[in-house]
Image 1 (tube, rainbow, N blue to C red):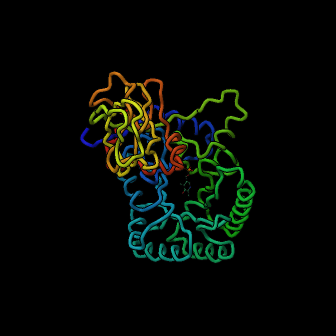
Image 2: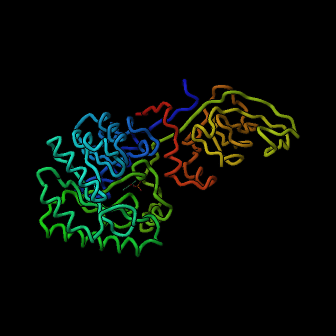
Image 3: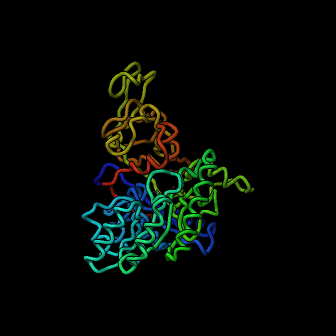
Amino acid sequence: MTKSSYIHLNSDALRNNIAFLKRKYGKKVRISSVVKANAYGHGIEEMVPLLEKQGIDHFSVFDFSEAIRVQKSLRKPASIMIMGWISDSDIDNAIERGLEFFIFNQSRLKKALSYAKVIGKKAKIHLEVETGMNRSGIDLSELNEVIQFILENHNYIEVSGFCTHLAGAESIGNHKRIMNQLKKYKSMLKKAEEMGLEIGLRHVANSAASLVYPKTRFDLVRVGILQYGFWPSMEVFIHYTSDKVNKEDPLNRILSWKSKIMSIKEVKTGEFIGYGISFLAQSKVKTALVPVGYSGGYSRSLSNKGRVIINGNRCGVIGVVNMNMIIVDITNVDNAKIGDEVVLIGKQEDIEIKVKSFSDYSDMLNYEILAHMPTNIERKVIY
Ligand SMILES: *Cc1c(COP(=O)(O)O)cnc(C)c1O
């Protein structure tokens, strides 16, 4: 271990999760594996080959640079879909490389056409329509014009998909809004088909919608968080288990994050530990120094609250999280020594520190914590 912490990825857990999703969606629905934000912190280069092994041949990313990383990690041809950002100067590159991308406004469409003409290759686009999230997408009022434009330029534009994004399917409070979005999507779809547009794959659902609203699955689901073994929200988990006898979580977490004890110290009663005065030793305390801090993704809001596992014992973070280190209480761990494994997220023996527990203490979403996983540390796949 040259870096101060490392990430392990459990390939059996991924196999379990993808098998669960395939069973759930059935054979007719294709899965697009969402690997944006460095595969939700897991690592694009490690996750893509593992996902390929599970039969995944469609990947979704946010931007062009992630798409290139996916393409370089692939062993077989697969579809790569860019849902968000491509700079104007990369559009020709994207078309050249056969990358698919969302068209969310007319200016993007016109640029795609002009580059496709220059290169002499079709741009593979996914037409994103605005159905009520009011973030991005073609409005109903311009749909006619846009479709006409595509039909006239079908030699240079191939529609690989017709899609929209739902504004919060993970919360029942948004039910009505989601239903309205679905209705609007269907009517825009109908219009496109009536005008004779070949629309490719119809796709709407993310993880939450794919489970809570099965009708949103259409031809393809864009699944992110579930494949990594996390639920989009507690509500979605409860929704899933509500009609099951077995209430156990069918998903397994893939990622664990670990470090090692760097130093050990005994502190006398009445001393403050770490910066400032936020932790006072009320009795004799034995501490371990762990070389992970907020610069490496261990949130400062876990100061005096976070937990780690050392030698099968849960240990609390003492004082404030430093830039590169935390101090943990090992008073009750008899056999701890320098170099022992420290589990920041994951399991040791029968104790587990969940990403969820991070978010309980820190007000961050699972999504946010995963996305903040350090990028520059070693990821090892455990088979
Ligand atoms: C991130 C994203 C998804 C996947 O979301 P999950 O909740 O992780 O499944 C799907 N579609 C779009 C447009 C996204 O940006």
